[in-house]
Length: 204
Ligand SMILES: [Zn+2]
Image 1 (cartoon, rainbow, N blue to C red):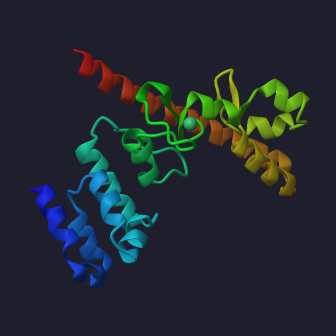
Image 2 (cartoon, helix red, strand yellow; image 1 turned 120 degrees about the vertical axis):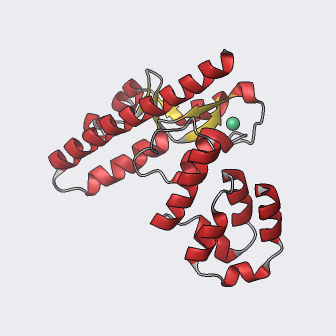
């Protein structure tokens, strides 16, 4: 029934004339995959469905809860519902090289990427190397999430370093960022527990 509703939607050009409240009602009960497909049908729908507005986030949240109820946890801090469900359930290929072999792919919640081992290794640098070789201040690294002992995601480090260099009150910035890191780690653990429970149900 939902699929036929979606097929009907694709055939209605008047859809783009509708106000957002009505669009939201139409999108109700569509799966995240359908929402992704619908977003590619027109500019208006793309703008509406890629938005981070409350109404759009609610649509994606409802869709996640309906179609992927195992993901009970809230998204990571500053992560949209669209990105959350993409990383949680929809990503099927390495976002850097398009590798599609599931055994070679892995979610890295810490860096918010879905990647093959080869591509992620090119983008991770160890704590020691960042400190000694690249002269990144410890303060900057303490503001970034690491993937265990393997290291830090270079784009995250560069962003943090730029912010740090522009900040006048560095002590407050570091304190604030360190709290963010703790909060983010808690949310990652919560998501991993959701995945663990879903896997253990599947195994039994
Ligand atoms: Zn790759």
